[in-house]
Length: 194
Image 1: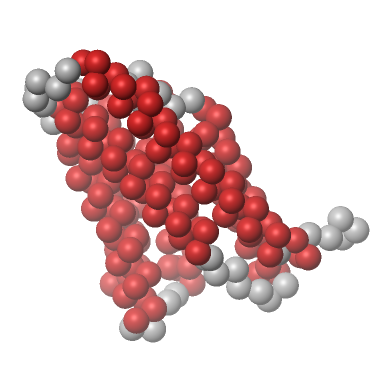
Image 2 (image 1 turned 60 degrees about the vertical axis):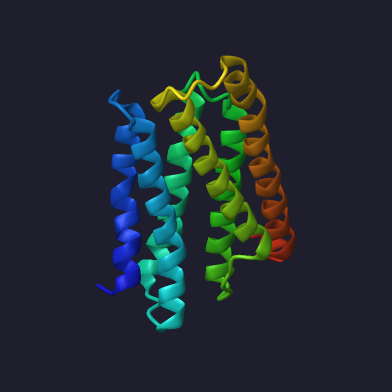
């Protein structure tokens, strides 16, 4: 197994530990979850770069890399929906999941037609901003819940109720735009007569 595939596999293996530290009530558990999520996100950036630079692209990597990304992001967002501290409802999560299913379906249709659907600028922007939003949320949880820094509770509530939801909804808007761009670009592959 080459290095990019090992990094992708490491990302998959980090997901249960991320979830564990999101739920386990020990000192600094949000900070630990943040470090794990950040490490997993870094492997996402590294594995593709190393694979392309060193011509190490494999079918295993093509399969597991996007799957690992989706599971990592959806795991974090699903936990946020459950949390009282994060004001995220199920609707943003469902929009993000629906877009992922749609793009995956388009990629299957494209592959069946011999077309490779590369990640476009909107897809990369959506992924990067969603990762930033998740890291910012985890950082804020750590600052407000793991440590007693004397931050006024009113300020914490304002960030919880306004800033974090804005980050999540920007991710949703980018998700919808990138999904629409993919759909427009590959609409010709969807033939209702077949």
